[in-house]
Amino acid sequence: MDWILECSNCGRTDPPDGLVGVCPACGKPFLVRYPLRDHGMTERAEVRRRWGMWRYRSFLPLEVDEEPITLGEGDTPLLAAPRTAAAFGLGDLWVKDEAANPTGSFKARGLSAAVTRATRAGATGFTLPTAGNAGVAASAYGARAGLPVRVFAPRTTPSVILQQIRAFGGDLQLVDGHIGDCGRLSREHAAATGAVDLSTLREPYRIEGKKTLGLEIAMQLNWKLPAAIIYPTGGGTGLIGMWKAFQELLAAGWVIGDLPRMYVVQAEGCAPIVRAWEAGQASAEAWADPITAASGLRVPGPLGDALILRAVRESGGSAVAIPERTLLDVATRATACEGIDWSPEGGAALAGAMMLQERGAISPEDQVIVFNTGAGWLYREPTGHA
Ligand SMILES: *Cc1c(COP(=O)(O)O)cnc(C)c1O
Image (cartoon, rainbow, N blue to C red; front, side, top):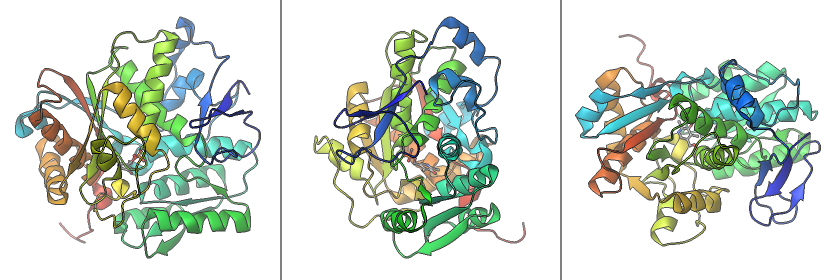
């Protein structure tokens, strides 16, 4: 393998033998580094000849001639959204619509990468805690790998998401609590059975899959990055991953100039990163009573807190929290606007764009990318008839 693992906190490096978790020295997440990779213009041209997120294989943890476990994730639309911009008083608005992924959310990207590596390392089964969509993606990619998946999800997770986990064959355990409580149960299950724990940042590869968001935006904009990225943040893998992607693209010479400002958006009912940002802290304390219908944002104590805050600070961004009613209302109104199916998390990000413009952090002339991280239909209660 031509990559190594480097602890994001203490800098310890390890070879990626077998199944890897967090840094054994300090318990913080490992990140993948590729010291020997060739990122020449041949590789850049090669990107145009492949499909899906694995087209960026020269930036991804894949051995030469290895085939990934894939369902065609990635290659999602980057849409100019003039009607939405007009309706919400925004300027040069673009939407990265991750609803178009297999399983209906961008969790597909991370799980494709993690399941690929763990399967190759000899995994016999998987377990993970989820606020919802990661459980759907893990169930689907586990099935694709031919391996069983145990999913621990809060009982309050939207019912369609729970139904999708079961539909893909996931062994769903409902938990009275939030994703942190699910995490403890998942680690116990891993210890007892040998199942591989796929929790966010407890293995180093989900973030590499999420990193393709940044690589893809760069390619879709013909290697010229936008002014700002507005990201609905739970565990923060997408934001950390994109920031890592931009550094790697810059180092490879595939992009030049300023990198985008990275903006975190959270729900007021669970905003540990926003609170830490406003207090000027480098890490976040856990949120005591996380409540929001945007289930992907219901992550009270993200393991990547320091990495999220660092990316926001280094990029010149900031962090804002949206009231619950506003994020739901914006998602509903935006979905009726121009055919994009907004999730509550996406609604939060769009509301975040409005708040940031009001505060003068972004201007109507800035090219702004707002993330719709999952499909709205996953959150709607079935009505039975039209
Ligand atoms: C998981 C999830 C998020 C949060 O993503 P992170 O990268 O973990 O911050 C946002 N929106 C949706 C729809 C999700 O499923």
